[in-house]
Image (tube, rainbow, N blue to C red):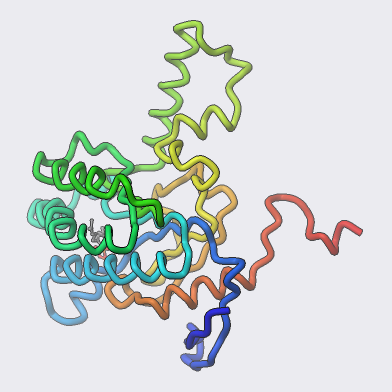
Length: 262
Ligand code: FPP
């Protein structure tokens, strides 16, 4: 059991709680929202929120790894984020360069392996290099996978997977009737995560309650936890609190609870 101080989202009341070590979600995915609002509240430019958000990524990655999370997927840049002002996009493209240049030694020390999903080949060359170097430098790490969704979109991911399956059908390697969930799973950008591909817990910060084109296939049975904190304010305690909420849920995957089956 891990003890932590849980702050009730509605009342603000702080109570000591225990996390069940045997029920830590194996895969946590986070929609890191609210960087802009965090900055605006402080009369700072939006990019100051992204910079602070990058520091939160460091804190939360280490906390998740220590708690025994196996995969942490972070929505860092969506295929729709290109429509933001160019100064903001340029800054967001520089963040991975900053992040990995300072954080890779600590990732290695914590045995964390970096993975990226998204259309990386469309990113600026320096961003691509930073990401590819981080993946290569942490390739031998056997602990948590820190999976960045960068230039990622859930619908685009599904279309790319369907195109790959269609090519195999066209080449005569696959019968249309043989297309099933397992075939799709393998073609998706999470295919290499195997049994860990689907997030058990999906967190969105900043009070918004939508999926915004994130992991549309993989989130079919995820538990959703929406928290009020803006991403730069999210921390280890907030992560533990979200996991605690997850542990109070009863996952049924479309079936019935054991007690209901009787
Ligand atoms: C959403 O907040 C956040 C983003 C679009 C960018 C997220 C990126 C980071 C947290 C840094 C990532 C770090 C690395 C290492 C890649 P928003 O700007 O939409 O906030 P708002 O809704 O308040 O405007």
